[in-house]
Length: 96
Figure (cartoon, one colour):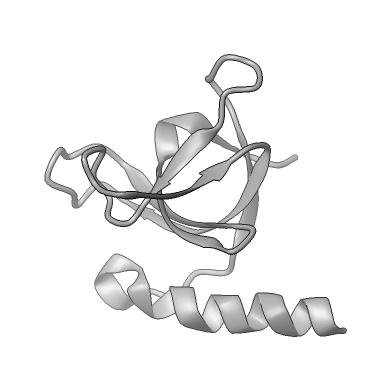
C-alpha cells in the first residue's frame, strides 16, 4: 500500500510537468539500443547538454513524450528510483 502511495505522489508531481499539460498514465519502459550495462542518462531538461540528474539502469516509468524540444528530437518525461527528468525516447522500449 505504501509503495502505491509513493508512486501516486510521484505521478502527481510529474504529470503537470509534461509539455502541453497533458496528464498521461505512467507506463513501464526498459532501456533499448545501448551497449549492455550502459545506463541511460536522465536530464533536468529535454536537452543532451542539460544537467544529468540520474540514470536508468534497466527500467523506468514514462509519463509522456514530446519532440517540442530545441533539437527536435523526442524526449520522454521519466522517473527511475528517485530521479525525475527527461530521457531520449530513442533508447526506451515499452515493457511487454
